[in-house]
Image (cartoon, rainbow, N blue to C red; front, top):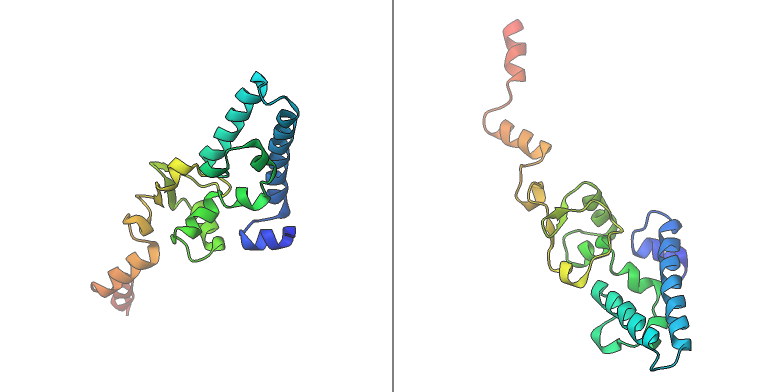
Length: 170
């Protein structure tokens, strides 16, 4: 797919984010190609190949049914883009769009586990995926209400004190 399409589909800021993922992917594929050149029983291929596959399975790029080096070569940029926190927040329904997800993350409304994460390109591991939620101190997560909501609640409770001072001057 074209880079412009990917940038729009996944709510990326610029093409540099795509290039960064493509560089990571090319390094992984190059390592897999080097290992595939070796003999099947070579200890280096067995050890490093299993480590590479295990790392990719842990971040959720490969699934358990495709745990072979041949499948590593078939990985696409989209596989890595799917694992970004920005995409995961949108897919979990915490945001209305991928662009909204990016804003929520940058404004520190999203946490992974107990840690607030404000980096949209954070790669979510499989075991961390179920712990993505709103931050505890965020208005979305039941924390203190936002500025406008507090102002409206104050007005509904009996008006604000600023109007009374003007009437006294007259």
